[in-house]
Length: 162
Ligand code: ZN
Image 1 (tube, protein in one colour):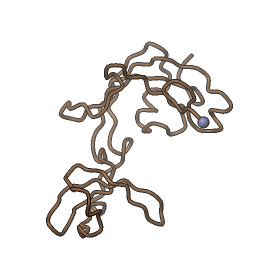
Image 2 (image 1 turned 120 degrees about the vertical axis):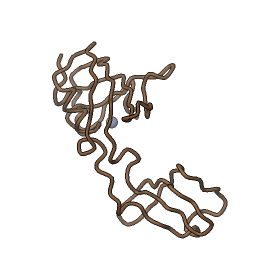
Image 3 (image 1 turned 45 degrees about the horizontal axis):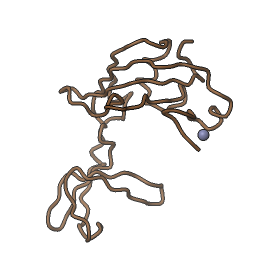
Image 4 (image 1 turned 90 degrees about the vertical axis):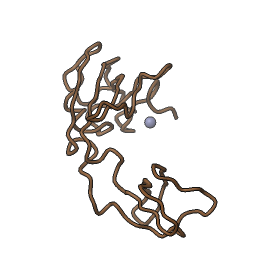
């Protein structure tokens, strides 16, 4: 079976940046393949496009531009926030992630810089503006079930468990 819309796909992946640093991988010791529903936006659009038409056992290196990955880095997303808006019982360090809630919902906030009275945060995705280098192996391809299509995600190994 070939990867197409409405197939449930399992992949092993390694994601590296331009410098070859590993950002994320499913190939850690004991790592499970990632299961996703093709054509539903479960994974970044550039990777989804590149995997269309592949089959079980295929391997592929895919380069995804920021526009088809996590988006361009928006400078307006970098903001200076008073230290008093953060919990006082937590030591704040660059690289930390916080979850902020406002009327638009929940956003993840990454700490860039910390001074005595301010914290510089970045609301962009940490991979925004970066070219993504994926090393992919297709582990399994099958037709998605009606329930999976309804839920918009894969059930079972590597997917959701209800
Ligand atoms: Zn479900």
